[in-house]
Length: 242
Ligand SMILES: C[S@@+](CC[C@H](N)C(=O)[O-])C[C@H]1O[C@@H](n2cnc3c(N)ncnc32)[C@H](O)[C@@H]1O
Image 1 (cartoon, rainbow, N blue to C red):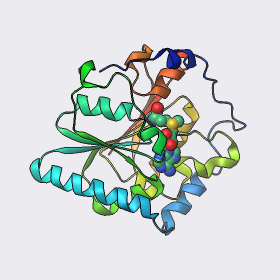
Image 2: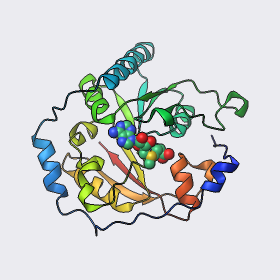
Image 3: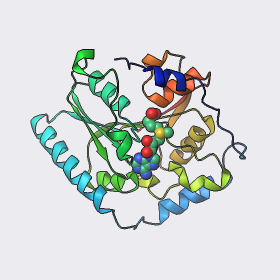
């Protein structure tokens, strides 16, 4: 499955700046922050809109599993416009793919190259607007049988003082990392993945970081991946296995 790149998007490609951080290497407070979150429960109340979105998805997951007892659930967290969600659905017809993003604007944006005229015919996916700080806790409590959990190009928050805004520094890290047999993270900032990899060891999840082969924009899994690669940046992947 390939994405169609519009002229406007093509102009925007190739001018993405590499990450600049005032932090050298892994954050010195990383282990302390992760251990704090592992020993304190995250009790922030759920937002109503995410609770409602989860309820809707949970009903779809239950119906899918009833019809396909051996079926698998793939979670595409921070899915943006949902290009990766659509590609994963096409590549995994046996699965139900759920794409989650907090941005209504992105979720509802048209993604060129994914109409029936383009040969796209997958209907085994859903995009939902929700805050993952809440959604992850609800998925964990509901014990969805997630096979693959993608987190593609999350916001890097490169300033040292923003460690706790990165997913591995967030209070939901324990629940987040309990979801999926495999966790697949991608970033153009290798340090983000190195930190996640180190944090994951504290929950007994292990895996390796590798660079993605260069590809054309139309082969990229997501628009951010296309943008970074068109700018000559290396895209990295961390694959964690349970
Ligand atoms: C850099 S974009 C990457 C989007 C897409 N994966 C891609 O590669 O094109 C990061 C995305 O994460 C989403 N995001 C950030 N924090 C989130 C949260 N707490 N809950 C849900 N989505 C979130 C943003 O709305 C944004 O769409």
